[in-house]
Image 1 (spheres, rainbow, N blue to C red):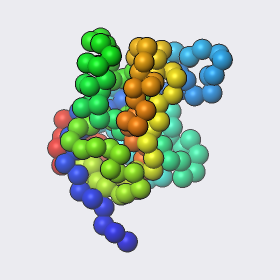
Image 2 (cartoon, one colour; image 1 turned 45 degrees about the horizontal axis):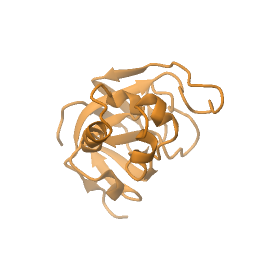
Image 3 (tube, rainbow, N blue to C red; image 1 turned 30 degrees about the vertical axis):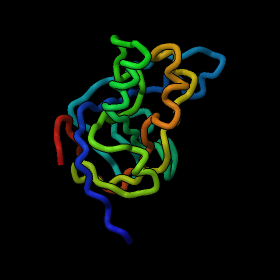
Length: 162
């Protein structure tokens, strides 16, 4: 087995939510489950982030944790003229910086000692236009973040560089 890539990703913010605001809501309008920002979160192998809506969602789920790049968020805000946009609106779990997240698709890597496997791009959906602003869905295609499986238990904390 190939050893995981050790990353120099910085973890800036962590978000969790008790419920799904968009999943399964097509034609019904969004639900209003708040996303909470926390300073740390427990990663549980094969299950997800304890306290998040996707914890124990289904066996071997490819989106046990989702990452989004701070650099992409900043560019999105500038390009679409969204100065009041907040990264929590993306409903991704971890806001990171320091790498192109698409490079981790199909690869194992470590973030603060927690082993993850990038499973696929976290593709944006049409709800992004409601959550962020007009044009966000189209603009985010190909840079919507990274879905991952959790391969080892551990804790992630904000403002830490491994």
